[in-house]
Image (cartoon, rainbow, N blue to C red; front, top):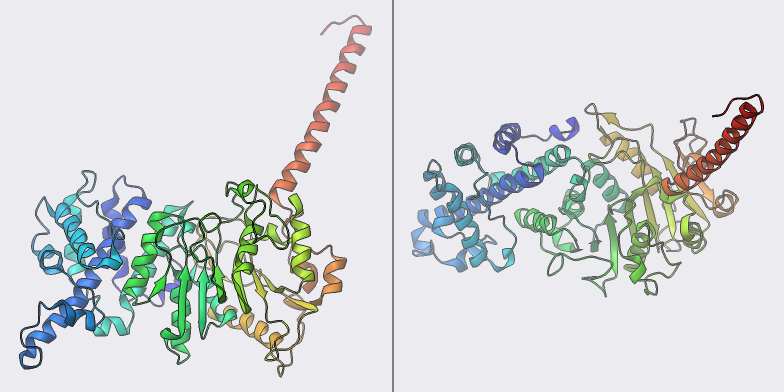
Length: 513
């Protein structure tokens, strides 16, 4: 886990992780993450329940024996936990061989009594490949940690543990982990640049809900209320959708992430939504997104995206859902900045000429747990003529942050707080009327649209900021492979011609091959 995040470690996450790691034996991380995260969730809601339960017992005159009155708990915004699902009951039975079934029963009971959790909680603790002795040991270990009392909530202990585990699972799971986890420093940067103080926040591929959590943290750290934000999201992967539901529930965040998991392209759960802020980390370069079935879709206002790559479909989906003064910030592969495959260059030109592209940030490599593909941040805005901001309709801000970040492990880099501050303050200074913005060679440049046009509407920041950083190969993979295979085909043809010539020459002097 990145060291910077460990500054927030309370002290017992590593113990929990070690216990979880021992449990897995031959289990895939994708499976055993649900074992651990499900128990963390169960411990949290049980602790929250028990705190109210104890308050009722010590104040009988006020509550008059209401310790089993569900309305009292609902009034305190706490989930109702039936007796057989309470942590003390599970702890007292942790050494029994049937503990797995007891946990499954607890999950079923909680879902039955709390409709908002229906179909969300994992219920496969009784399966044979899950070591029940280790499961009991994990329950014992977790029993010594308070997760739902007021002190824990004020420190956001449960949220921090949950976030820590998501990060560790993403790292351990490898390919696919990025489906539910975006590195915290990247999420923080998006939030610091968009500053979602008040309004509707939307993420069309919300994963485990990290964008929402960070948005709530941002507004509360600036003295606002989380009730000033309305949360909307959608997620295609059913297990990840459940993770998001749990993640929001344990933090007390109310959000509409759709009635069920669904594909944002083919089953948009928020068709009429116009969001004030959109934050997203769409999966990179998805080729099987079903674009051939959406050729005439109303969202493709700036050009039909190629069926073989969803990047420009994601961008237009988000633009479609922006309010008239809305702004979106999202992560994409660097290839999106320069690709000309299947009309993408024309679509990008249309974005630029219509004044939608606000800012591009080139990110350092090795930020993501699950891919080494170079990535960038796009900021698309509809408020570029807004009187509150400097008129930026004829320019785009380019920021080259590739030199930033600190290696926190052999494989992973993380943006520091200083990096986040420098990037976000540069962006906000450029946007603000009364701030004296200046270009900084090698770091930032406010380029006129005419200059971008001269560069073929390519948006790679290194072309504009005058960076001495070695420019990575920003040629799109498909375009590069098409060019290389064409060259290779020509070389094969040449090889055949040379082979025939050599055979002819040998034959002329009496040697057959």
